[in-house]
Length: 337
Image (tube, rainbow, N blue to C red):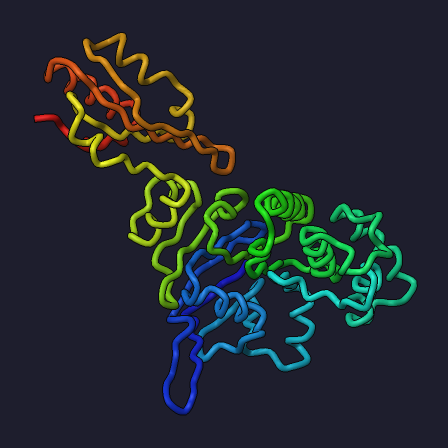
């Protein structure tokens, strides 16, 4: 488990002090994938670099499995860092060394005996799907393959925590999906705790269990990924969610409709039930679906539909009451005069 308590990171110059992390407290459970989302300058990179003390916090505590890293000696910290590995956006591979030698170098640096290096490198390459690239050089690899080497290198010392610093930002969408699938597999098979920072909500939606949204060095909202997608409270979180679940209707549609426009949200199993068709059977209303989508977040459906209800006002109100009771999430967007 990772416990961050009242963490502050300041960057001082002769002219000013800039606060990168501003009194952040958060707990990350063992074995979960935790996403930290924010735009550039939000403080997420400073926060994740504090987790293994690549950046030394100005104040606060960072506890991993009960040990406060901020109180360790240099020798103790070096040992603790072996259990907290990191992968980066730009891979940082040694260009003059083969894939095999890049991994072997990491093992040698950790003082692994020579007899154990070859079988461990073979195991790591198999784990990340690069068994046939052992003798290739970084220049001969695609971006996704380079990141797989970076992941293998990070796993070399059997860490318990993997930190991902914008690990997919330099990759195309298809490659990003394959890397996220690999990270999920590693998380499940090794029980690894993964903390990743990103500005891409698609990444968080794909693999994270919980997430935090950062702005100006602070965490402004935190919770399960599903709950934050379904009911974001803070404006910044809503902005991020809308980048994936875009449901803005053209303004002319709001003023040319004959009936009442409603927005319905279907959570969980109810998204797969025929609530709308039941309404048309029970009540004397007509309906036009103007927009609709079902997203699957951690394999749980989240549906959002915008539709127009036309009919007698009493029937429309009865239909709205029925939908509200079934979904607990209905918003009236517009009612024709």
